[in-house]
Image 1 (cartoon, rainbow, N blue to C red):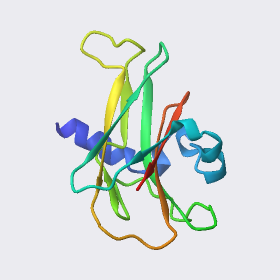
Image 2 (image 1 turned 45 degrees about the horizontal axis):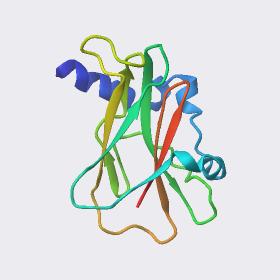
Image 3 (image 1 turned 90 degrees about the horizontal axis):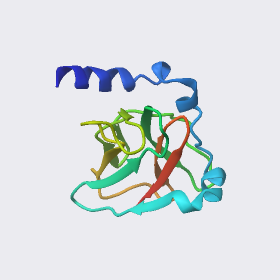
Length: 143
């Protein structure tokens, strides 16, 4: 458990992320082009769980972050990959997916837990959870 917590702390330092993870699509217009990947996560008092699954035959590290956009469809300047941002909290920002189909006790999927921690948010703000591997990204609009 201590090793897992230390890995999460290390992953929360954006400077240690691989370049592909730093470049995960954060342009809202590009997200619109990938609308089939967007799932709305309802704002509730309990956490919401999103499951991602590796489609490739290689081990794939993944990273998750919250992105905030303003009414002009521009990502806010505060790049934030911490577990808490604005009204949302994510439990796991980094992990590794086994190859498609899984291997022994290792799963090819991961659950990303998102919780709304506030009931209010600023007018015009649009929030997304972005999760990605080097090969694939998933976008979830948080409402």
